[in-house]
Length: 95
Image (cartoon, rainbow, N blue to C red; front, side):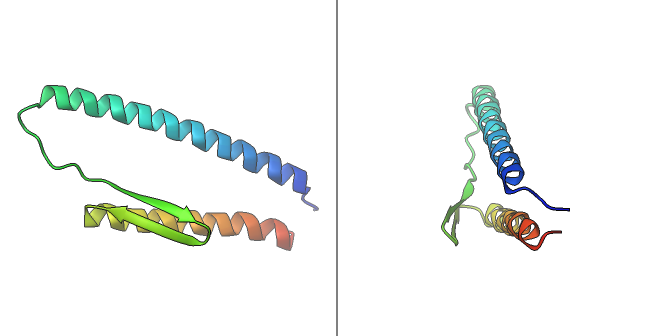
């Protein structure tokens, strides 16, 4: 069975668009949730934990202020890279 490259590109673009929309929705939900929490507990100010990954070419730059969040960021980056490699390699070998 031959996989058409146009079909793969269309599915990839659609998946990227869906993931971008889901990401924006999650950021909006998180900001509204955190603003409600800050209004409810103004006197109990805790330290915020953050982390993230920026992939510049083949090099991931991982940052954060909490070791557990950094470990999750590393694990999720590895999973995303493996999925990306599989999505690129599988159509090339014709499986």
